[in-house]
Length: 303
Image (tube, rainbow, N blue to C red):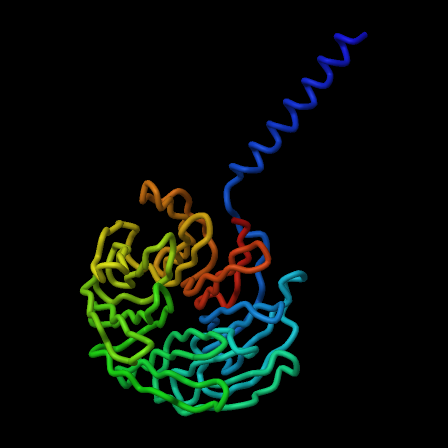
């Protein structure tokens, strides 16, 4: 009787271990598709919601990440491009107007518009600053959220596509094939790093800055300590948005896929089909969120 109980216990332990192993190695997949309409591009998580900048519908959508549905549409009227969350607000850049828009998540209302310059692209926000890549002016513009006013305009020498805050600096990928390093204490460009054709987005992951290339076939890894490219990784032409968790995730605009990258071996582990022309990747609520500009959707991906 005792031998049978021990055998049964061993079988249960084996089944639990097998189930845990299967769960640990289960492949990433799309678990929900949200109709956002227009041309969704920028994504940000904040105030318990996902915020989607919709270029085609001139609005920003608020998505409930539990129910996977749009719960509010906030008209902006200025070709919104990117989103960021900081200082208790949602910040949205505009490609067709000079205004960065500030939205209060408690009311879903616009509370400020700040003139940063025409043709804005990516932006980053903290409790004390909002940094905006103003592609059309070749500048990174720094906004003070306490006064809703511009406190610095920094010329970077290219057309900036994004801004990332990491390792005590602001980093701006420029369409001319460079990345500018900006010292926040002086608002001065302290380095210009040559990478591949048309770097589009960047993310800080495992103490390194990773930069995508829309027209090139590689990702570029920059060592912040040296402000130099430390490695290159071939992933195929069309890489844009990036996100960092236990792996590096890359949206590929050309292939319609989300790529999972093994940073230790520097190789593609998985390719997940999401939608047409995926642009941005954001982490939130235990999932990856991908904006699909060509499909008018946002994909929820189980990592």
